[in-house]
Length: 328
Image (cartoon, rainbow, N blue to C red; front, side, top):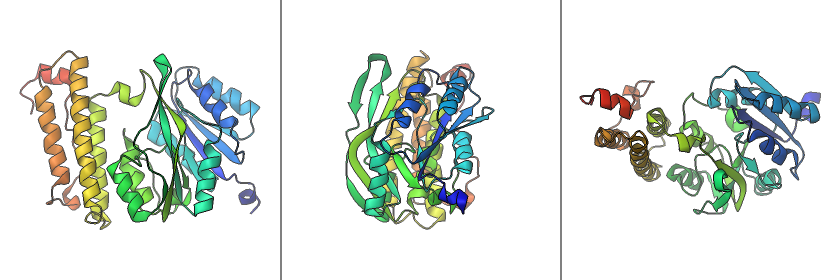
């Protein structure tokens, strides 16, 4: 009982890997929050730079920071490690190379409490680090949405996106339904709908309070064949989950909108991938593979019971196609 009484309202989970340039600003932006009843769980995921030293420095100075040091297992496992020890009524994820506005926690927490919501979201800035340029995310909405409306907006991935950051969640949405992050890129998209499926209400604040750093090492700036395959795999996982829980027909239109958006994004990523490798051979082959995969995962005739757990790769790396152009 005493442990529960001393538990913070919010647990902030930060997966950390080789971000010595950014983690100090990230932690400083959280320490200076107007809302103070929170803990920070920073999971060092086997960083090879000075990230761990910076984390330990902050842990020594601030009693509400806990550092977990683990071997490199990826962002998903780092988030799961944080979830395992989190004590707050609410969970908040912040990426270690990003930072937040001073009222970030206060506004999200108040949105949940005042509206009786299980999840609260805000909008965000793209911060292009190299030229220090801010671009505000343009596709906005605001208000309080019931489960059905929130799920439809989430699945379309435009007004409410499948991002773990820029939101706070009731921790029970994870613990009561044993929701964990799969080991892959785009793990947010793979599980966000599962969390929203159990939220009675979702509040959206029409203000950008999160700063998403775009830099040469960020996920979207370093797209490769594996990440594109995980992007498509995540969309497949959404379909399988909706089917298995009897929700596909209810959210079919929104899911199909997601597949169209994913297909367009993957076309662009494939083009960028081949262009960066200066190898356009096989580009059309990869695009055709993307198209076939998306058509399969959006077809009416689809049975999740026939899908194997390890969904197949779709896109091949340009260098592999260069070596073996017969690959199909």
